[in-house]
Length: 102
Image (tube, rainbow, N blue to C red; front, side, top):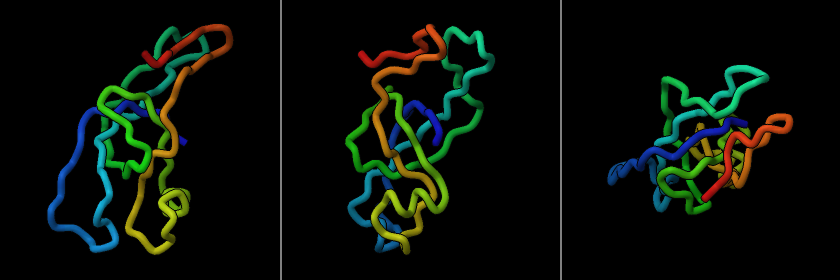
């Protein structure tokens, strides 16, 4: 699983028929740079993930990729590589709170 922050959305009017009705979000993975980290750091790249949870811009989310994404999308034959599977409330590292939803 990948921790990520929602940065935006993608609209595609022409797409694979299996993707009709799907919401696409641009997410940026978040990393923990050290065991003593005080905050989550944004990674340098982004990816597009299918959202079935209703996440919004700025939300911290859990993303799965690959075969796990197809299973999470409830369609093993869909052309999905990344799916949001959770909207994060908090991230704790040891006794340090790295993220708390508003």
